Length: 443
Image 1 (tube, one colour):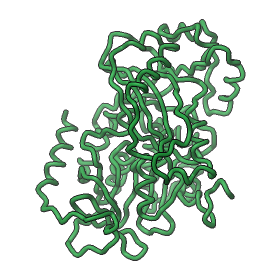
Image 2 (cartoon, helix red, strand yellow):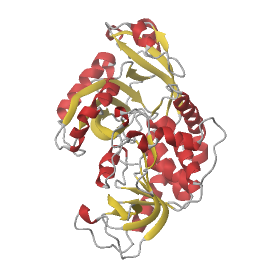
Image 3 (cartoon, helix red, strand yellow):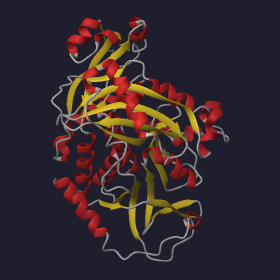
Image 4 (cartoon, one colour):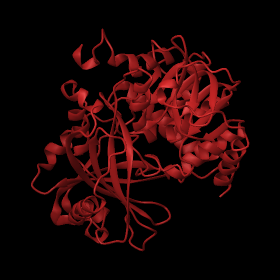
């Protein structure tokens, strides 16, 4: 593909740059560097959907931007997501506004980026387990911007013929956006390169600091100077920032799915449970009482959960999931066979035709925050350092947030909506988790 080719050429170009001596340890990363460094206005750490979109928007404003991503194959949370755009799910004035802005950006993004993001709208089917009170479950959705419609078992089966009607007490449905996360990510990267941006595939090992100010980023092979650095590393953001002495309310789950090749089975809807266990898992794992466990090796903060669901992409492939764990080790190993068995057993109850399909197991690290809102903005006591992470449902609002962030970066006023840039950054700022040394839950 043209996009992949451009990224490959960009990576090859960087291999021609003479390598600087490797650091002996991470303890060296805050020492001043005497060797001349390439300099940028912004360095973006992380090439998933957040980093790619933010790099693109910053480059649109005329900044010199370097995007650093460790994996040229982009095997990250973006790659393995369902691709859903829950634009109906805003629950506050702010999140409703961001969802409205986000879905409008997605509807026009293919044209803007000159690449097909595979945007479409389809029916989301939220299944209610047999034995549950369907009316009571539906009442929990009454505060959303667009309230899902409650369906009877028969109506749910008509909407999704593959559904096992004996396994449900009913379902909720609402129109839902969908993209190919991979195609969208690559489209953003290609657009960024056309704007003169630079992409380097390298592992970031730390930040360069002058006094209290962040003045650059260090990879395994190179050091780069910058006026501003922004961490968009998803679930890896917590570890990366902590190594720089910064603590924000960003956590991560290890999420596991099964992915098939294109199949003849046709799934009409995006199927997910109406009661998502993942939200409870995130809430319990980010409580103040257990926060210290995230910094201890080998800890599992809560038992794993399974939210059985599936989505079929335009090419006929399926992603089936999803199992989530809260493990303190970013590189923790899990039993693939056990996980695959659990995922197949779960989907067999709801969509039995999918349970036996040949599929490949994948896992990835997914970020979330302590209050389910994104963590976006400057780090108050580290001039030059910013964060753009912690998005539990990132795909729908990322284009809008990235555009807002870039507007803020050039000092533009935002008069089009009641939430100006300063207000937005106040609500989403990393500093909201810190008050006299306490997280926001202690206030």
